[in-house]
Image (cartoon, rainbow, N blue to C red):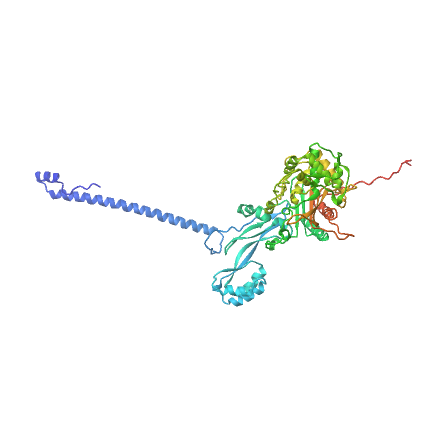
Length: 597
């Protein structure tokens, strides 16, 4: 605002010249100035009132909206939460291929103590030791009477234990809600489930994390809140798994074996329908890992993917199939298997020093000749053999979806020589897992296409690259069938009427830790498929240090130990897989019809 002087000199002089009163000019200017000041104050006051009105309007609007929201919401009792990051305690279920629960969550509680609030610390310790026998009374008294202000007493308690603690009535004993991982089937499929434990913990919640098996491999998926209502669907069949575990457990005990594993795989999809490793454990109460001794002695050891062994003569069919694929031989090609045979300064012998003479390729597999497959390997060559094993997935880690599978890397020779090629052809000099062997046999069973073992349910065939021609795979299957039903086959106990089993035995001496082999400790394997003409499934059964003692002398070969167990397993699980036995027609008697009357 421009301030005008109250007595402007020009106007005062002009008024005096005209005889007017100069004070009138001053009074007029003062009145005008006061009117301008009044108008300015009024405008400022009106602006402030407008802002204040808008503020009150917004405040009443927010209060009204909140009151309306509370009016239409359900009443909830307020809870006090400790400060800190939010712990996500949701975890998706795991189900088998038919939707049956393998792992789920259970609402439970943990028990913690606040010693400063306890009335009778020593009395509470004595009663807790009675409720939980694994707790030491002296330790509890020391913790409760010390300087600690907070301590966990038990991470998981049952409703009955919770009620017993509640009856103690000490205000310093409190309960924290928990989501516990529950495996309702106990030991069933324990090595696949693996187990879970608590990660980050708070008083109001605890984070459940996978510690082994599928629980750890799929941990990100299972912990994702978006998947809380979408269970992880596995390829396992719970009914088949239960039957396989029972048969293998009985067979392991009958054959006095240290351990055992079995794998049942769909040859077209690579789905593992059943996988068993014994001895087993209960994932609801997972034992602590062994810190000394042989890892395979621990029940946590998964023999199907961690047990890297020389699997013996089960590898011979790969040498025969590759030789036929390369056009070097056919099933009837005659091979001289007579000794002596030396490669790289080492003598290649036969089981029990047998000498088979000249055999066809089919007979080499039937009689399980080391020299026969060795000569096939020399015809193939070490470079081509390596390529073939790689295509079958026998020289790389298996992609099976549990964390333990990453540790089951096949052991190959440091220098791959002609001697390596020969010994590998009959399953020595290379160590793999039973899961690798199952994938290799699946390629023969499905007509020559590689497959990858998977734990996830598939919607259809999942076939990889072709590793052998269809007719070669068919010829290999006929050879494996002769191993079971042939006159000189090594798996004569493997036939199951109506299911036409084909397979190959493998007996391998166990490696010593310091080098060399044990003479009376074997890894025995029977790799089979059924039905032989058009296989749907591959079954691998491996026994660790078996010995059959029911006969006149101890027997340690796969034909006497692993084969009967596999046959019984096929007999039990095939009907559960929806497979009906095929009844072979009986031979018609030689009767000549002489008259129609």
